[in-house]
Length: 351
Image (spheres, rainbow, N blue to C red):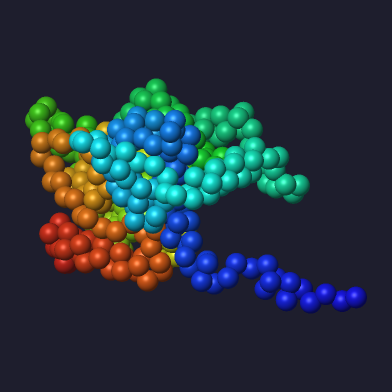
């Protein structure tokens, strides 16, 4: 007896109206921080927690917790109950079963052996050897810095990225790229300190290919997987090398948001290095002339002589394709205004 596989597939597929109704819930929980919050609420005694308790359990800053709790409430995942001056959060009715099933399934998937034919990740020894080669290359590239400083920055960069890496195959390459940025920032800070102290003439001998005269802009958001990456790409496209552009995250994600990847590819072009989330460092802030946060409640060190801006921009991780494009357009207008203030039109050369 023949079986109509197409009919079978249609019979097993979720109805469109049901899919549309649950999509906001899925989008709301498709974020590592929100998944942490949901798991904390699912396992809490009595099924509820105050916002402060969520912050302590997830090691998130209170403003960041409030932002994500609001998004989860808007999606119908959690509810809030005010009692006096306290606000307690719990999973919405029915969501406790959904959350438990989802978290259990994810835990089983994470602990399952890799499928046959999966690409085997390099061993710890392979990663260490690759990082050692990176140190050798960067010691030569940055002769102004001691080999011990270069070695420390490379190792710290690898360890920082490994905390969120889901696959370590490309970890040494990304760690070297991150280390290059950090070493350049160190030199920029040192050069600025030298000029400020007027200890010696600024002859450019204490830096690599990062002239101190170029403005430096740092874009910061929580995950460094969406808004800050888009803003950095937009500024690079507008001004090319006339501005040193950095982006970072207070709690970087494992990878760029899938909703943002097509726009980044469009902005950066096929020959550009693939962007990746990076943690925020003190030297990146110290080296920057302009620090822009994205309305996520992220805090950066407030240092004298820096220009700070906060752009309240929507989160593309939860947006539809049309919403992501609108966020892109909002950022493009803000970035264009910033570029016009930093770089004379004659010096801007977008790609």
